[in-house]
Image (cartoon, rainbow, N blue to C red; front, side, top):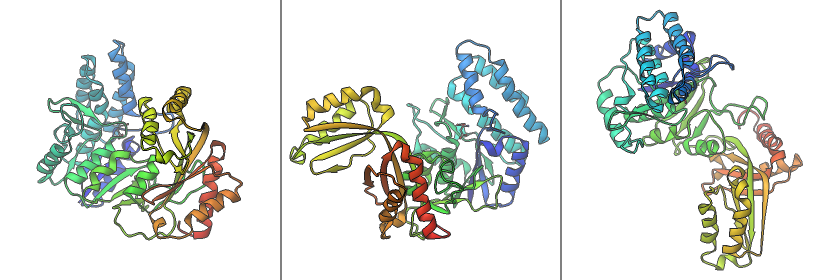
Amino acid sequence: MIVAKFGGSSLAEASQFKKVKDIVKSDNRRKFIIPSAPGKRNSKDHKVTDLLYMCYQLASHGLNFDEVFKIIHNRFLEITKDLNLTLDIEAELKEIKNRIKDGASRDYTASRGEYLSGLILANYLDYEFMDAKDLIIFDHRNIFDTESTEVKVRDILKDLPHGIIPGFYGANEVGEIITFSRGGSDITGSIIANGVKATLYENWTDVSGFLVADPHIVKDPKPMDMVTYKELRELSYMGAPVLHEEAIFPVRKYGIPINIKNTNSPEDKGTMIVDDLTPVKSKGITGISGKKDFTVINVEKTLMTLEKDFFRKLISVFETNDISIEHMPSSIDSVSVVVPTSEVSMKLKKVIEEIRIFCNPDNIEALPNMALIAVVGRGMIRTKGISAKIFTALAKADINTRMIIQGSSELNIIAGVENYDFEKAIEAIYEEFEEKSKGGL
Ligand code: ASP
């Protein structure tokens, strides 16, 4: 059984709904479908969810939101008309508008894009509409309740031949609508796939899977055929978008693979996200990602490792200043603390002063403008020469590597370079592996 989630661009207008229908009907294993709210039809267009947030914002300040709501109204009306549906979408829209006027919550308002999209798709495919408020459960603190949801999904969906479940939201114990964070329909799909123990979770978008490197930096990078959950975590943590970060957790429990597919090019294989235990085929790397704008605070102190409380004191300075530490490579008499510049910049003086007071270092300096590049690959553990290739590539491109970190899972190697070398470094590493592998990284 397959659970298929379709993103906003896959449901942006009637012609896209038609593609979705063709895809769903072409394989009868596709039983449960999770729609997003209609997304952008072109780069100047608006996402329905953004418009709904706007309505809420205006209404909550007692301002008129008719004009914005009209845009939403017209979009849904146009879709239902173009698809020749019998559904009375106007009645639904009227009810939603009244509730927003009467002070409906931000989450309720934002969720209506998925709700309406779900009603339309159910009507169009002639599948049962299952409201996510009865399936996706949040507790009294409005935190997602995994156990209750699993039971609900299993019990309610078990005898259904097909169903449409809107993404992005659920409800708490008293029936209030609660949403996930933005892009959360990916999470709904994953939860449903886990609950019905699907064999596959398809995530349909407008790209044919993940690319090995950022196409804004590397020209025509190759797509990734296969990536493990853990590799993807490493890549997304460093800034590779497409799938919501939290969407892998529910399916991970039963090792259900996720296939990222393209609604506009359904024959493309896309990227398969698989269980971490899946044997590795590639001997090279899986992907390259990175982020700019880190600050490295180097703290030097002879014999610091003999002071049992040294690291605790150092870390507590960052904790009390509410700064997250990204990495902490160390050597015998020094340690570097890598933090996002955005979190530290306003507090840098204070942080350095506090480290001086609490840790009494011999020397301390801060290097801003550092970029981190993560080269990720589960094949690394067994393959010799990966790091040699990475650093040779950087040296050949005349890039100074300021820092090297190998993640403890041995899934990645992180190189720290100056911000201005960031793009050049990614290109150089990509080229090195591309050229050597000739037809598959
Ligand atoms: N419509 C919501 C958003 O724009 C959720 C989603 O599309 O996954 O964030």
